[in-house]
Each structure stands twice: as C-alpha cells, then as structure tokens.
Image (cartoon, rainbow, N blue to C red; front, side):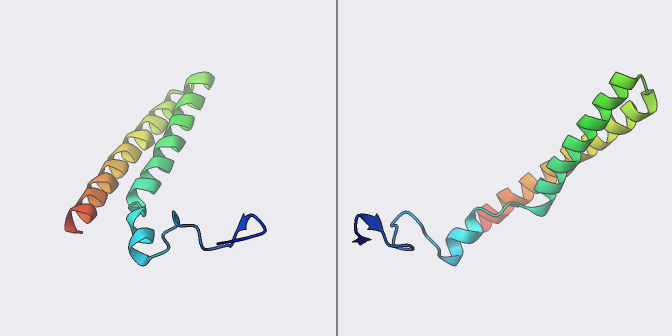
Amino acid sequence: MSTQGRPVVGTEPYLDRSAAARTENIVDKNRTEGAARKAAGAIKETAGKLTGNRQMQAEGAATKAAGKAQNAAGKIADKARKAVR
C-alpha cells in the first residue's frame, strides 16, 4: 500500500512487530555490561601504560578480564534462552 508513491507507515512486510520478534534480538544483561566493563578496563589499562602507572595498568587488566568473564556468562545465557525456544 502506498500513498503517492510512499509506503504507508507500519505496512512494510519486512517489519515484524510481534512479541516473538522483539524478544528474539534481546541479549542478556551480563553480555552488555561485560562488554562495557571490558572496554573500560582496556581504556584504564592503556592509560596506565601511557602514564607508566603500573597499578592503574593492573587494575585495568583486571577489570578487562572481569568484563570478558561477564560477557561470556551472558553469551551462555543467550544460548540457553535460544535452546529453550
């Protein structure tokens, strides 16, 4: 359906607005938080390297490792959620 050559909003066949389609793309909270923590750790680690601050570098590496672990836990939860469907 179109109005003067433009599609009417909400009639695009490729947009599935059903509840199943909306929940299909949701990622686990741990996955997003882990990615953020990993990025923050990488920034802190780099800042420690640039300034020569070994403590900051070590803290950044630890935060980065914790983010990787949290992200991995989120990936497992996502796979489990998909397996249940």
